[in-house]
Each structure stands twice: as C-alpha cells, then as structure tokens.
Image 1 (spheres, helix red, strand yellow):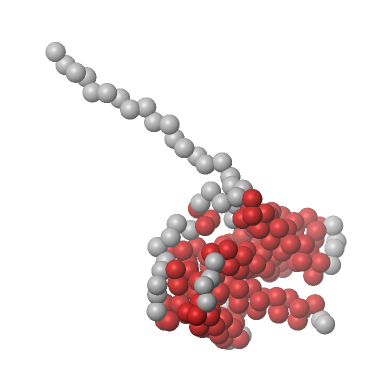
Image 2 (spheres, helix red, strand yellow):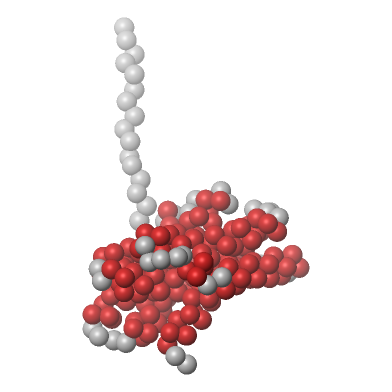
Length: 215
C-alpha cells in the first residue's frame, strides 16, 4: 500500500480512538447523546484544527475531507451504544487516548515540518496536535486537563516529536519516522499508565506570618 494512504488510514484511526475517548469522558459525566457527539468531535479534530489554523495551510483538514467528521460521529455513537449495555473500565479511556496522542503527535510533527521546515515549530505543533483535543475535552467535561496533571502526557508527546526530528535528520524514510515517533509516544504514555509514572509535583512552601500580639 502507498505510504500516503497508510498515513491517511492512521490519521482516521487517530480520529476514531480520540472520538472514543471523548465519548467515554462524556459518559462519565452522564451527558446525553448530543453531548457525547460534541465531546467526541472536539477531541478528535480539535488539535488538528488548531494546527491547521496556526500553520495557515489552507482549509482545515476536516473541511477538505468530511470523512474525518463522519468517522468521529460514527465512533462516538458506537461508543454511546456500547457503553449503555456494557461496563467500560477507565483503562479503556486512557488507552484509547494514548493511541490518539501517539498518532496525532507524529502526524502533526510531520505536517508542521513539511510546512515550516523549522524543527522547533514542528515539535511544538506536534505536541499541540496530540494534546489540544484532549484539553478541550477535559475543559468541557469540567476536568483538570491531563496535560496539566502530574501524569506523563505532554512529555510523552514531546519525546515522540523529538524522535521524529532525530530520525528525519538521519535521513530515514518519512513513513519510518512517523512510525517510530508514534511508537515512542505510545510506549512512554502506556508505561506511565501501567507503572503510575509521573513528573515531580511543584509545591510552594509558604511561611505563614503570625500577627503581632500587641501589648
């Protein structure tokens, strides 16, 4: 199969798994079917939409190809139907989110590098593509975004984006760079989930001053 078609299929797969994670987040908040579709959509296309707007690369990807919207809506409804009958463990939400993070980070990094030829911009856009949709999802569902918690999340995306840049500078084929980038992000994120790995938490130690007792 042509590598371009494989990347397209992977992109649709990323949309699907992020739509699942958004729908599960809506279910945990007991939203109706409209809320499920909205959260599924914003999670699936939010990061890529922001990337395309900032890079000014023409019509946003889901406007050029409505198949992305169709996949997001279909998988949101499938998740809604399945979760109404079967119990869904939180691990399902985390794993589907991890796959979406990995795929979107790799593709976002590649697209930004092809557009700007700037390594730093490509890394930032890659991380943003992978994390922005999840941030919107968490804000709409009144949760602290995963990227702002102590969990290793944006760090995994950052490492995946760095991996892409390193591989591309070593003249590896673009498709190989995409796969390695996605694998690095996914491996770090799943390891963090499995072993409960996290970054150090910043805690400010404040000194409370006692008021003068007076005479």
